Length: 126
Image 1 (tube, one colour):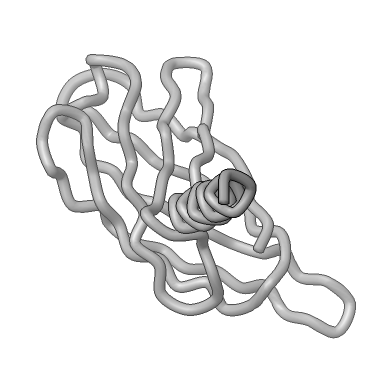
Image 2: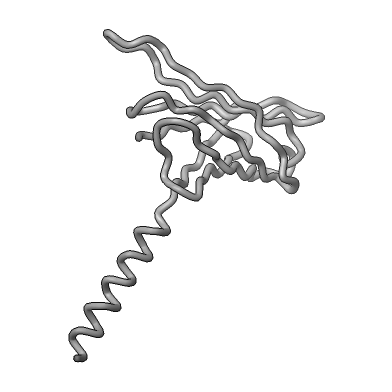
């Protein structure tokens, strides 16, 4: 019985960890960094991404995102652009459409009310 209990607990813990799998990535610029996250792993189609700006000078900025895949032989350039909605205190939400599997480049544009605009960059693979 003890072995069965251990096995069940291990399976339950494993299922819980799989359920909690989410997307997290940091986009960086010289001035700040932006934590990107999603409640579920990113997939093709529409995705909601949470953004959290690291530097206080950009917490009230206007934020937009461009997710793109460069052209390759036999495949055209693809991109999705969106304006982020502020949730306050440097947190934003944005919807992006990912057309297909592969490596996507991400540019997050931060335009504060005063000061210099910045672009944080990263990439992700689906």
